Length: 498
Ligand code: 9PG
View 1 (tube, protein in one colour):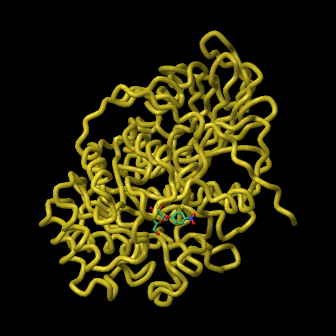
View 2: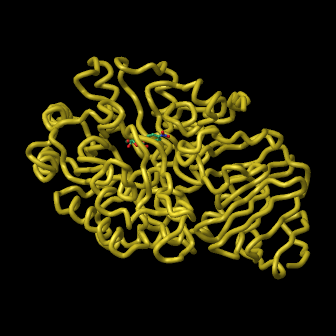
View 3: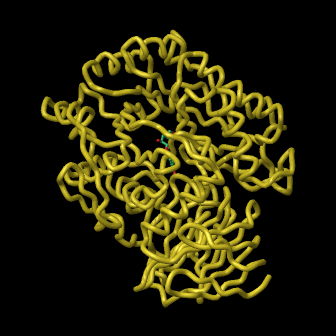
């Protein structure tokens, strides 16, 4: 480790690294498993990039206190559990600070890393790379330079604009074959590309076969969707095993374990604890690969792979590989098995190790037909829980990823029934889907009034040009839309009494 001076445009900063900086397009590259970069000036904001899709991502005031999620079983939904007790603000892979002169960015040139805000600079460490991009300048320029270099390391994929009908935000887990048939009939005349069946079709989390709600089976459902002119999409959580699943009973040897030999918690959901499948176990991986092959064999060629952070949790693995490497090898095996023509959408996914393999990534938490779930945010500090407000805020801060992957901001709402969002809130969410060029909804045509149905039809066929005007401001088809008031609002988090 040595002290080096790094020239960044007009300024020079102190850094510690293992060698002298190397000049690259838009910045410099520093080397080291752990490095530090001094501030060029006193910063006022820190860019926190969350570990996985749902993790809070935004510009924080530098003095915002860290506020961990007090319930261990829910922490994994919010961020990397490894850093749950961190004393400083920090984020995954990339971090930045803003001062009056510009933005200083430090980003891993690899699939994992942690960047933290220290008193006099940013510190960064990684177990998978020793190369760090460092730049200082205008926000869009430093992020663009970083994502360009990152893409050279992790790869990129291209996906045309998507228009998706997804079952989740209307039916939740209560989907059945007759209910979906009715929706598919009613979607006639609406320009969706994909009809995606979400959670609720399977026997259990881990048992990826049709349940009793789908008596004709999954191939028949895929056929029905395709015959209506849509691609058939299916939700799976392939790296999870619910504690009451058959998989869990039959293959305890496939579960990721902690040092004491107990299965690692991958969260609490579906009325129980879920555990992680150890995807470095060759039989477990072969099984997961077979699950995906089977889904593709049924006729589904758009797969939403959810809760996949479970593949990158800390634990004792069959093969002793770093957790993000384990995750990436597993998703690469899935990609190799299904081929390039199947669209793979990652959800609940560690972002950086998903790049180059997935076509699209969910870049924020779930929207939901409520704006904010205040009990959950204030008392549980859960900004990753389903709520439209933080879904918008996090997704808006992830748009710099677009050159490498399609960014899915989750669904827009056109309905008034069963929706507590105001017209302005619905419009803002819909505008974000326009910016992302990823249009989706779960609205059931039968619940829309004629005016709402027309609005949905127009939304699916419109051709609007989008231009970025500033950090939060966009020109969308000639209208100026400002996500700033929502994206830059500081959440109210109350202290948890011990
Ligand atoms: C299906 C859903 C939908 C949705 C996904 C994911 O933090 N949480 O408790 C939490 C629960 C559910 C959840 C996300 C976070 O939703 O994002 O689109 O597919 O699973 O169960």
